[in-house]
Image (cartoon, rainbow, N blue to C red; front, top):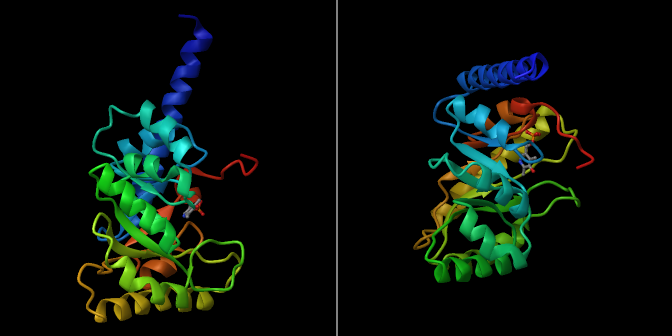
Length: 239
Ligand SMILES: *Cc1c(COP(=O)(O)O)cnc(C)c1O
């Protein structure tokens, strides 16, 4: 082995170890009851391994295909829980059901019905969050509040899905006060849904909070936060 490849290897090992340490430190600042989902979209399998070494077991990906490549590389890490957090096209529903334990981005009744059908056929029962849009932000997917309320009785009939959460994404650039209001609205909505006494549908999880707003989300009752940048640094946005 040449000197140069030797030093390259040790540099890489050092970077992975310092990433692991950084992730451990951040995890320690988050209440243990809050589930930390490490969002690894655009980052390589090595980033997953570093977070795994820091005892993270929940990983989030935005795209079914990108996740498939990483999951194949990481098949030795058998106890990872994979979360789909990005918009899902109906033609990728079967793959999503096969590859993911959680789907946070259920954003229409039609998608929920397709997921339910695929889950039944594949003998899977993914945990799901209903993605709801609680702020004016035309760029984001999600149920409108009224559409969601109207769809609840039908969503309650989907026996192959465990619909147990609400997910929301805030627009950029809100004040902390505005952020808090929206996150609290999500928590309130969960309580309202639960008071309706549906036979299956019971909201136990609030998937809310990203790198820029997770502290506010936790204070408002988030049970799952989805962190990318805060753990792994900035993504190459050209990807
Ligand atoms: C990318 C992404 C995240 C992570 O965003 P950061 O700001 O990097 O923490 C969380 N949730 C969803 C839905 C995302 O697409």
